[in-house]
Length: 127
Image (tube, rainbow, N blue to C red):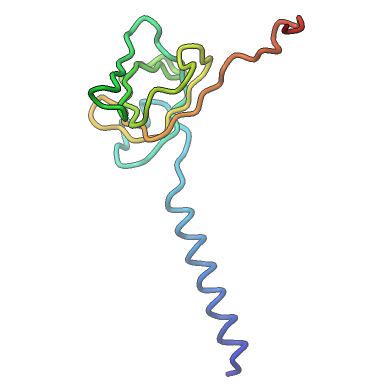
């Protein structure tokens, strides 16, 4: 075999390995029902902040722990523990996507995405 063939085979093997690794680590969108049924799998859960429940964030005790209650799109509410600091303008968000796994009745999120209200909704110029 020529050296070019060996290099080509190695490149193809590495590419296949990268593809399988990236597919293994993907997470999917779900609601809390599906996330509770599969606690070992990471999910994106879409919902809204339950403004009737308190949020807990005390940076003096633990700056990387923020707790709140999320209501998913099917109306199921669960306590969420975000292992990051509290995001800016969190209470103003219209929709929240948490990325994490279920542990018992709590969702432990390692990341969060927020859809905040648009400043362009009113149709009036902002001054």
